[in-house]
Length: 334
Picture 1 (cartoon, rainbow, N blue to C red):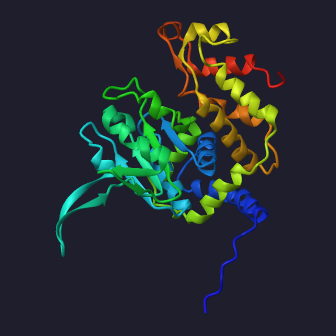
Picture 2: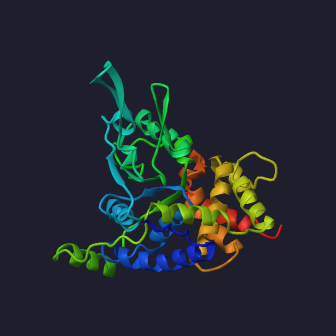
Picture 3: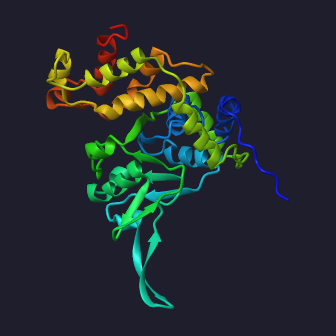
């Protein structure tokens, strides 16, 4: 006779998440050198149930990092290499004609998007028509084919890598798609000592394999737990005002925003600031969200939602500089 599994309490789930966070860092250290902030931001997005866009030049271990995280969470992993000739059906799946007892019938064959963690590798190497094939999957966690809706496995995350848009052969992601990514994480070159460690590690015998620490049920519990973290209304209001201040030509918009920004952040930015802050609160072992949590995540949440205009580009004004000025301008005490 099988014994019934008793689900863990919320307190046990909190403890599992906090302890597991340190263990994740240890396991990732087997394959990834440095990049602590990058790892933190990706894990926060996963704990919060959001998708993540990872931007960086080729050769910075973006793909290896995503694959390693999938192994730690023991989730079904699918890698899609985005190329100029990739078609939407190559992602979502297609209907094929099959012989059955009732004669020939159309049967839906699921595409690689039917997994828990999707690595959309070099997503901006494919034209917008194919990029848009992920829109429904990312928002509704389903695929519609021939009028039929097919639910995706849960949990479902898209971790997309992209090359800097200045590189040849890239197609900038449309704003509607960018907005569905919770974070835009920037991977930069490592310091010299870390690069030396990477070269030594990758040119020697393979090290220890990554051990899975969680499963799909654990991740779903973490996602549910994050939403239950308490947050004061004034901190929520601060997140809303921070996102609203980035929109040009609105009431109370700062002058530098009108001068440098062509398009600002929408409501999703405030939602993701709050969700990310809740996840950050948990992994740091705190019981309530602080203003510093919102401020720490302003960069990854806003940098792909704030579009600079030609004047800003001509003056060398970066999105990060604008976000820094927004943080200085919007007071959390107002």
